[in-house]
Length: 145
Image (tube, one colour):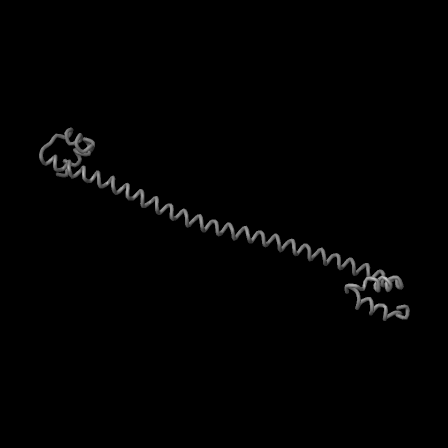
């Protein structure tokens, strides 16, 4: 090791820097040259910056991955919610439609009965009691006969 001088010191330092298991050799080289000591300090600074940069990129990637996971979950949840809402809305609409149809059917039947009773010359009050239609509805129906 002591036979290495000048350019050979530098070449050995450059070749071995960063390799695992060469720490003792590098320490010896650095002790022999102030310039190598300064180069080693700079290399450690650059390496530290690179490690910090890699750590930052890893953290940033993890953060972006989490944002993506959240966004995906939100979109999937929205789609499920829309699907469920549409299904529930359809069911409620059908249910209300059936109710409305029944009511309209009942009213239609009452109107038909009221019309027949008007033809048989029953009074408005009697027809109202029988059909549960209002007197106004019966009078309006009478105009159409």
